[in-house]
Image (cartoon, rainbow, N blue to C red; front, side):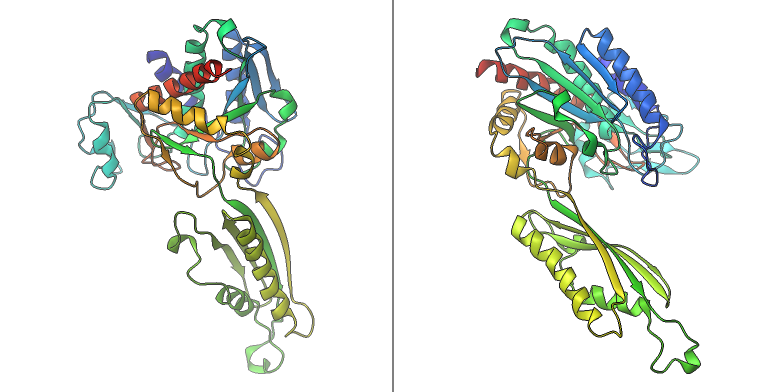
Length: 407
C-alpha cells in the first residue's frame, strides 16, 4: 500500500491537463513527461515489449505469461480534465474522522460531509484530497497507480498459470481524442478493461452513442429603424431551432437510460450565430432519430428563408460499447465474479458518458470500465482513499486469476 500511495502522489504532481484547442497528440507536454516516467517504471518492473509510441503517445508493455492462456489488458489515461492542474499539492489525511476538512484556510474551502455525504463511508481510512485550488487527478492517475500495484502482485503468480497481461497508458481521454489513435495491433488481447470509473464497485459496460452538431447561422443586420422586411436576426433563428426540440429531453431532466440534446454553446449577434449541440442516446435507433430531428428542423427553417441561412456539420463521436462487449461476455462475467469474491458489491448501470473503452471496443477489443475508487472528479473537492485504491488493485489481480482459471 505504501508504494501504491507513493506512486499516486508522484503522478498527480505532474500537470497533465489536456487542451482541447491544441491540434497535436498529446495536446500538452506534461502528458509526455508522465508517459516517459511510466515507461521507465514498466521497464523496472520487468515487463517486456515496453514502448512509448510517438505516433499516438501510448505507453504499452506486457507481463509475459503462458502463451496457451488468454491474454487480457488494462488501460488508463494520463491526462486530467479541464480544471486547474498547476502545482497540485495533494493532502493525505490518515484515519479520517468523518468530519469536515479545511482544504484551504485562506480561501475558506472545506470538504464537508454535509455537502458530500459519501465522506461518512470513509471513516478510519486514509483520505487523499486537494488543497482546494486544483483538481486531484484521481481521474485517472488512480487507475494508473492501481494497474502498477496490480502488476507487482501479478508477478507473484507463476507465468505458467496465467496468460499475458498487457497494460496501456494513453493521452487525451478527457477531450475524447486519445483512443482515436489507439492501435489494437499493439495490444494483442482477448479483452481489456479501462480502470477509469468512480466509487468502489462501479462497473460499466454500456455507454451512450454520441454525436455533435455544429451549426452556423447567417443573418442580415441592418439599422433597426429601417429593418422592416430586411433584418434577419441570427440569434432568433438559433432560439427557434432550440425551441423545436423536446424541451424535457435535456441533461438536467433525464436520467438512467434516457437520452438527451444539450445546447453546449450559443454565441453570436444579429449577423451570425453559432450553436453546438451534443446528442446522446443508449439506443441506436433513438440515436439516429435524434440526429434526424435536428436535421429536419434545420431543413424546415431553411425553406422559410430567401436562401439557406443555416449550415451544419454533424459527426458521430463514439458508440455504445455494449454492442461489442456482449460478443465477449467473459469481460463482464469475470469482473463481476472478481468483485464478488472480494466482498465488493458490483454497482452496474449505464454510463451516461463515454470512455476510451467505447472507442477501443469498436476497434475490436471489448473494453468495459472498472472502478478506481475516486469521487468528485474534475474539481477541487475530488478525493480518494488508499483503501479504495487497494480494492481496485485487488480486483485487477482477481480478474487475472479468474481468467487463468477458466481456460
